[in-house]
Length: 268
Length: 247
Image 1 (tube, rainbow over the protein chains, first blue to last red):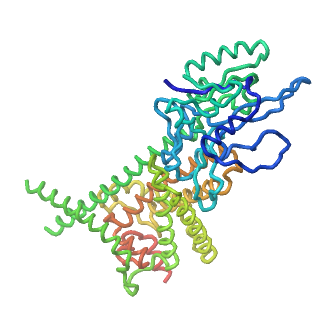
Image 2: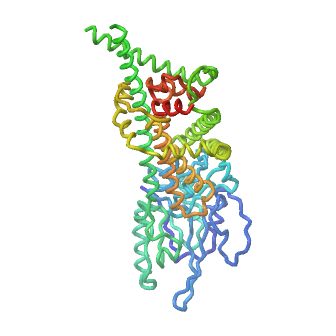
Image 3: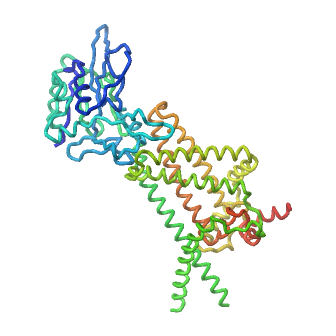
């Protein structure tokens, strides 16, 4: 049922057509940046850039390779951002499995920015730290509007080498693992990323090197503070109600006893 | 038969009395106290002013915080107005506390000393507390100082929770993005923890000081500053002895 995308980094040529297609379909403006001495541009994801290619210059025992990885929201099954969002602006699509962001519900607390293990969400550049207005700028939607109308996501559609594949998640896992087996002959560190991470990602990778070479966390986990916070919230609500009800009851009981005492004394 | 009827009647009296007290509390805030009334001065005018300034700011901070705390309620804070209020309140609170500390350093230090001084006498309060607060029975309560042990617990909690809130809030507000995400995450959790403890105790404080029948002059003392001599004798015997010796 769940849809997913499989990104085969060994087929990526760093043309960044996916970056452009994403901007075009989602009507995101271009960003003005300065030359940092790399083809990687813009430097980071932002409110206006929901996907980008990370360029890595990877040297290994006198050899040199250029590595590319498409970066965007990973659409985790157990998403930390969904757990911590107090407004319900970030939600998991129940059947397709994507993490959907509804900017009309976002109040701009920025918890998703701080809790995402992949550092994907970014605040709107116009937000104010000291006064607190502004919202999360937006992130990959998995082209939910296209997918729900039977189209494939814009990046997958445009990819000229077939490095981005869209399809059923279960099928893509099998396909990706087969590809990893083939790659192992040339790249002994080749691995499949995303099958079990964060309860299963909906953006999965075929990698020819260890995940950390590609700036991916080896074992991403739900931040313990996120779980602790959910527990604290429900406990806190319970304790608050208990404290209120208990104290009012105590006040009523104490008053009743005092009144009874007075009546007894008055009666004598 | 008559006995149960009487009991029921006094329970109803009590419930109506409590409701009356809640309504009275809000009316009372708008001045029912006559400053010329005879009695013992318990809280100075600056201390009372600070109390009410802090009270209003803390309630606003608490309510705007509650919106983001209860899962799903956060959406009520659209366009971030709750966070704007939360920040403005904390800036005002900081300024108010700094002004008070600079102007009345001695009274601040006394307050701190009072909150952190714990003696064997405090155990007596703990032992008698259930009968006192649930039964309205004053007979077992040992003589108390300027503040009783319960009030001391509350002062201590306001200080500890306040400092925790301030430090974790500072991290989230000014150091966001500069510290590791883990620091922000645990700061947020600790902020929530202090909110739970402080918030629950604030409810307890409100009921005990404004509604509970045994502490019936508590609110009055925080508005007009004075309590009656009888109330001072019965509730703060040790303190009353001290101040009457001094004068």
